[in-house]
Length: 309
Image (tube, rainbow, N blue to C red; front, side):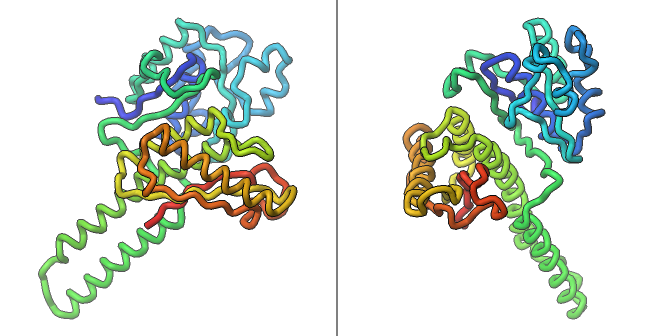
């Protein structure tokens, strides 16, 4: 079977995290039991743990010397569709790493060589995923409203065509080009909406430093993936909107939000070669809070991607 997903990583343990996340992309409804069956403890040496995965509650009960052996940072925790959060074992010596790389092949997941993945990565390491051979990941359980409206519109068009044909007593099938256009729209939206939403989630996880507009290495890494989507969809245009929390002076927050959006746009243009005519930068200040109950919350400091039709 040809590979469906390729994992690029700079560090061995980060690449393992990428392999597990690739599996979750391909099987979005996987449970903790499914992950333990897919990636058994036999891939590691064993040790005092009983699984390659543990919950945050289980991790907190470990002594301090063992806590550092797990991916427990906010942007490293695995989030399952059933609401479960899991922490992956971080300790992966060479022989165990080679074992999980070979093991991942049965799920059509391949791993790029480190020297091929060095360009564009930060000193702390990281990973990214690339879809291969026309593979389109399944939509996550939580679907966007846009996707829902597209489906409803398609069903409405089909229903109207059927009613008209029955009323006229005509046996002629619906015009092929109409059906084909609907199919193209649905497949295209399914592909880039899923990718854009995943990229936006990862970009927001790499929050801006309070009061600054400098892009972190994590943010630059995610923008690299966004550029790949733009290259594969040349008709796609985006507006990048910068937002801040309500803390501080409103005028300062407005300028800061504009600077954050512009920093992302300039990175895409100067470092990724994206045409400037396809991008817009807009600052919203603190006018559109994500967490209205806590205007000072860090999640209000964000940048969002808006698809321009």
